[in-house]
Length: 283
Image (cartoon, rainbow, N blue to C red; front, side, top):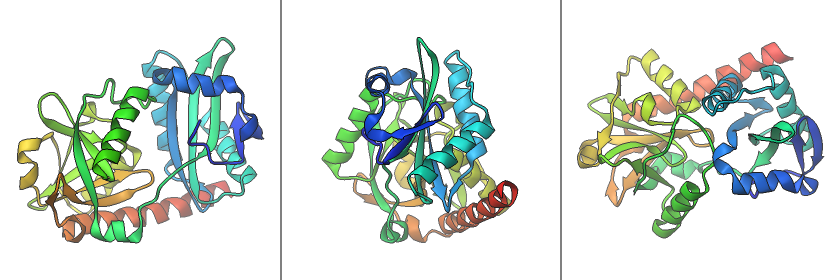
């Protein structure tokens, strides 16, 4: 678990030193990634952002693999609190992984390595590329070593922030670790649910935009029509609403587009509302 940066982790409800974690768990993650279901939850001021949605997505992923999640929503919430308290963290990302072995279901939580975009990246946008890749079972959030290595190689070789996935038909589905939204004539275009991992952040961005009467059209955008777009942005747990400055060197003025600015502002306000509401019902 090379992305574990916390001093303490939680294994099946027990807080342990990360350096003393059972090697079996590390081997499982390394060698059997497609059966390790996971979620990454952003913690802001001690609050697990959109926790209920992350729990339901994890539950759904496990059920799609033919199993059931044995831990309740309340118990998982308690374990998240325990692991962030043990590490003295109030603002971080917590990774929850679930896998099965001969002893049954195992639930591991730890503080995961994360990157939050800088103010400059939010204000100016980021560089992205394109990668030909069809994800197997995109609605299931599982770990996949081959996929991760291909993405890592692409990002490093082109020195880009993110890469968008292009399927066999030349259609853009999503980012390697994000969802993507395109803007044209004050309308937002995003891929239909069946082609993507249904991001928690994506769900709330769609809600925010519809509240502001911004039309959302769920359709796949082809690579050929990509450069007809006025702008685009990525969404995800750590990046929130992040404008894209360029794709393969073609520049977009995404960071100044009024529709994207409205989405950013609306989503940031929604986060503040969620944190206040969560604290009011848990304290």
